[in-house]
Image 1 (cartoon, rainbow, N blue to C red):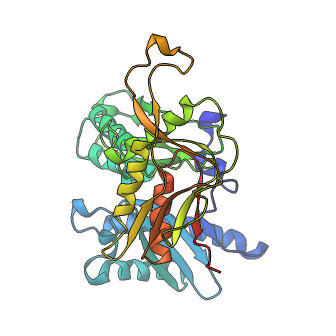
Image 2: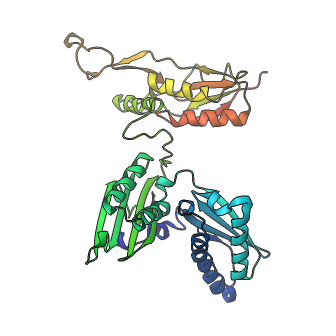
Amino acid sequence: MGQKVRPTGFRTGIFTGWASAWYAGKQDYSELLVEDARIRAFIPKFLARTKERKEQRPAIAKVYIERTRERVTVVVYSSRVGAIIGKKGDRIDKLTAALEKLTRRHIDVKTVEITRPEIEPQIVAEDIAEQLERRSSFRRTMKNAIERAMEGGAKGIKLQLSGRLGGAEMARCEKGMQGSIPLSTLRAKVDYGFTEASTPQGNIGIKVWINNGDYLTGEINDATDAQAGQISKNQRGVVRGKVAQRKYSGAIKGNALRGNYVAYGDFGLQSLEGGWMSAECIEAGRVTMTRFVSGEGRYYIRVFPHKSVTSIPAETRMGKGKGEPEYWAAVVRTGQILFEIGGVPEAAAKEALARVAYKMPFKCRFVHRRPSV
């Protein structure tokens, strides 16, 4: 079953929402359902027919439709919004008029930009189709698409091309895969895209599966610092912090009796778990907060790395030699304040501390300063 089920439909209503938002009775339901399908099929054909240059081909990820009594709102998700809007909005006006003529309803077209097209399966499939239509090598195209997706932060990607590949007389199927693609795991954020490339030898079907993380654990990759097989300097603290958390076998019991309230700034980041936090993890939080603090703002670091950690196991006797410290870590208890920030609006403080919390090896929460009595 796993290989034959569309991942988007498999998760619809469980972890993902519906592609349309409206309600209709039994008499009108079938008509509106067919109309939604006609709108989704019409938009890519219309934009491809009215494109001015090949480079301006709009890459459409999905189309969301919302209906009310008065109007129909169509939201187009694309990585090339400018190609849809056109010069001074003339192209989107033509699209709106064409949709109104097609449906005989009042249409409102909106656009949403996809900032990371390399991990959007439908856009990846259309990009591969565009390259195949330009007679590019299908093996090189598949390899480049896989590399871009993994560098963009995807947990895994799978490609499948079917047809007369390379102009061969007999059709065949070629597959490429890297990373993890748990198709039968409902909580895995696996997206699917499909399109066809029109070549002189015939059409080539392109299927793309991309795994972008986990719904339940919140492990959805944004990969803002992802590099080609490397970890950025700011992200090393996160990895090292998690290593420190694993190396400590016991749990940090008890709550923090000191340093458990905001004392210097206006807002703070409080730990909800106990553990070890490495010096590099603290530095990653400091660098993150520096970007949000302007000339009048200020931040405070309430933890200090005082515990040395070596590569030698803890049970090794002192006489055998512990070696040089591998890194230094701070012992954190539940409820302890890690970072504070002041002199900035609450919205900016929330955004700054939320990004700092993402780099911490344990769960944290945003807290305010206690009012003075």
